[in-house]
Length: 143
Figure 1 (cartoon, rainbow, N blue to C red):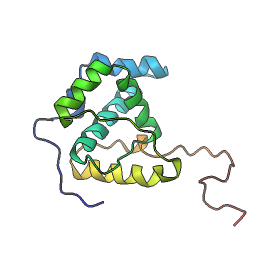
Figure 2: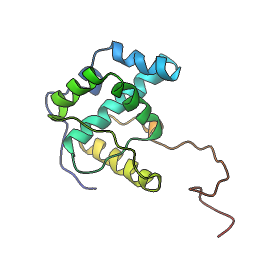
Figure 3: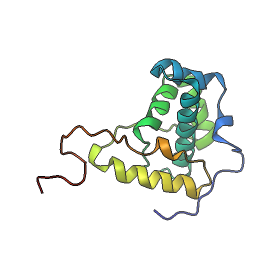
């Protein structure tokens, strides 16, 4: 995905686009340390800003970043206000097809970087845990 779009001038940092107390909601919901929850929420906000810049690109968050989006969605009033202020429209959540997720996540990271948004690489890389289910691991002995 090649893009020239950049972060809107009125957004200094994704972290400053919502009230600080909303960051604590993800820590409570997923029972995780506040530092990690803050990182996830900041990436979810950066992802949503990227969606506002590229409304028809089909961008997709990683599994970890999606936790931040889900936590934010629960606060519909705040989420709706954020969407109107940042995107001028409601950004709908629609579960995608699992087999296309990895390529969409890569395109999302590229779009975020091109827009000058922060990318916390650790939160965008899939888990290295392997379930031996032959659904996505490389070096499959059955090939």
